[in-house]
Length: 243
Length: 386
Image (cartoon, rainbow over all chains, first blue to last red; front, side):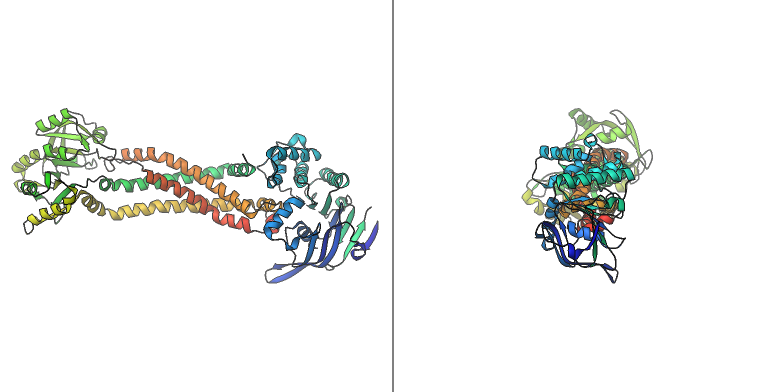
């Protein structure tokens, strides 16, 4: 394992996501709370990156910025060469639909839809026909080992199974990047292990770029690279190469 | 079914108790609105059913005051008048004062000719013209009190003193459902002859003259000419169209009608508040789901339409059931109200108003939750508790 400064790690080769001088602060009442300041770093294609750091360090904020569900105060975020900070809201939504797969801590499935319908949901934004949508959703569910649970509602599934449905929903559109915010935070150890193994497989076998925020070192150990974001030193990232 | 419709339909059924209670509220509100609107409309039924060529001549001071019967000949002589008949309010009590129904003393031969909306079978008409104490009763009245031909009934006079006996000659129907069949007609000559014996001062008088005008063009002239004849007499007249007469009658109860109308709209406003609260609660609980939908690429408009469709669907189901229940409930109310409402027929206008009210409630109830769900940032929405 090597520990290097991010500035040293920045190579530019095969970069998928590039953050340049990104700053973000939040208003809390009359007070402005800085979260990220002049952050610059890259994420390479086919990378499985774990973002770690204590609560309030800004790791979820960084994930939200990369996923295009929040916007920076300053700086640019290029994903696949496109500066997403310049996209208007409607175009950003289309961009997310095509390029980002979300895995949330609490799964965020639609409780009234079956596993299959939940996975099919993002495909309704595409031009695919109903039959093809169903086939793809079935395939995504089989990839996470839930072919036999397609007609189950989320309430009829365990936490681990729900998270696997969420992963299937995230990959069904074949997005450029998967973002996962504490994907094992609500799971028992065994379910967490299964979910992380699926994510590892998606990265290793299918070449999916994954950015995962986690508190859990065991979870982070499944990534190829770990970056720690320390509060109070926002411009300084520590990288641990696990490969 | 598209995914969007599936989401809408299943969301409606998500909290069955809450949806059911909201539906019950909507059904009651739309039903109450429809019934109250029907009551108001029924009150004006006489106005709507007025025949334009019929004039009514009454005492200029008040229609509670009589006119001399002798006026009939002079009115008949006015140019443009085809026929004249008369009717007098009797105001008797049948057994108990709570048994209210309208009773009129009429000139049997002419009245039935001039009011063809009252359908009297020939044999009943003949019996009525033959029998001095004869009376005919409307179908609804006969049903309510069990009157049948051959029955002798007694009314206690309130305007005209004493007890009055009538022989039921038969039952009449209305030409259309709006015709009041909760009335009793008896012969004025019986009334008048008895009054000559019992209360001479009230004899040879009538309540109102009904005047059939030959041409619609001359209605105004005839009306003016009749009143001109009796100007400066002891009993000056006021002649107006049947419609104007009915409006004047209804106007006396206008405050009640306005109150009923206001109440009907207040009911809608209350259900709007209830429905808006339901939708606000629903949207607040699902804020994280809406944020998730937006995160994975759905537009704020998609989310807003989900809420709108759910609200309008609930309102439409409640509205449809409420509308469906209105005619039977109105009919039952008409039965219960005895002769106060001869008929309570739900008009197409009322049904349309009910449907409109339901849809408007659905749309307005969704307005604020839609706005909130569409505008909430994804990050804040994802933080919301489910």
